[in-house]
Image (cartoon, rainbow, N blue to C red; front, side, top):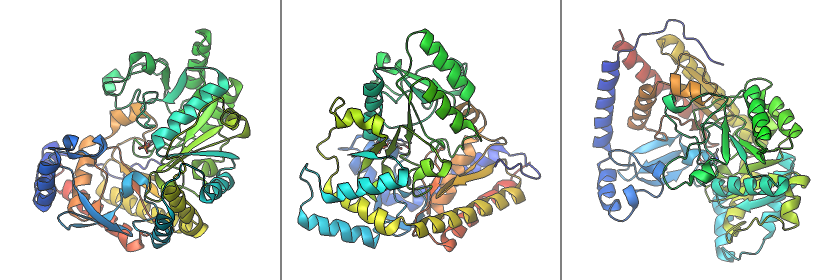
Length: 466
Ligand SMILES: Cc1ncc(COP(=O)(O)O)c(C=O)c1O
């Protein structure tokens, strides 16, 4: 899928800096209201935001409202939303079916900490879509991956866990390890280091999480053998089937099948983190798309149709430790009636077979459009996507793991792309690693707008190229 561009251009770095300066000044000018709100917000909200991922220099863009494929900021700038709440709003904003279900539930009481029929219905539907018989609910992706890891530990009686180097699985200590590492510190792929991501994570906890490179089943097996030799056989391997936090990185043919075979052979629970892929790339997520047989899966983001809801699905065997009470999988708001009502409406009325047909057709169109721009302009990059998600990765070679991402991704072009989008009515996640997520509310005209903005940036870049 990596497309070599026909006639690569030589980029002029000074010109890229100039374009970035120009676009940043224009964005500041357009978002003065956000600037004022930031001045107020920072006095009581740390760094002016509710989550560090929302922060941005010189100020975050504060949103006011959304409808369908569109959002408006506090300056009343209108955008087509390709960020979609970090890929949570594949249903689009304020979808009538979800609004109806939530409004109905509001009047019937919003929280009991007792199960409701909607939770049973959602578990049945997820069982059908994922082919996994047993489910539990959480309030976020972080809770889902945290509990799935505890289940795997309870099941196997082992402590060590494996994760993919550079991969994000939420903000609990077990998985805030070996993320965002500088290229020079990555080290030997057979001996990747367990590095805490930020302060406050005990070293002793980080060292229980062992990272391995993506797309390299041999390295995985070598690391497992070494751990076995140290009497540290892992409880689980937690991973995404396609990486969604380094742009989009697809698995090489045969890789996932080998991972399944190896983990099975060593009695290691295979946890597929579908917080981003679930319900956005197919009705049954990456599990359906790639025909996988995980022991456990984690869902969140798009499951709740805009409400904070997560889920863990598992085989009968894996979930036995939850059923019989050996592992406590608990939470006051688990299966919250509002979230369950939204999830049910979303699964039954919005994310239907027809919706996935629409998303896939639109994604093909936006990918093809971006590829054509790359071809014409000679910019070093390729367009890659799956389901409702995709990205233009500015790299002369295909990114296959964290090391190639850090080495080859052109950070400046990714940043410039964000500024171009924001100044031309395309709302995107700040950050060089982010992919777009389309929603059922997007139209062909909407994705064509995205392509047109990319075309404008490409021609401006080429104009100043050497
Ligand atoms: C793959 C993956 N897993 C887990 C999480 C954590 O989800 P949450 O932010 O809902 O805790 C994220 C969030 O971005 C994610 O991308």
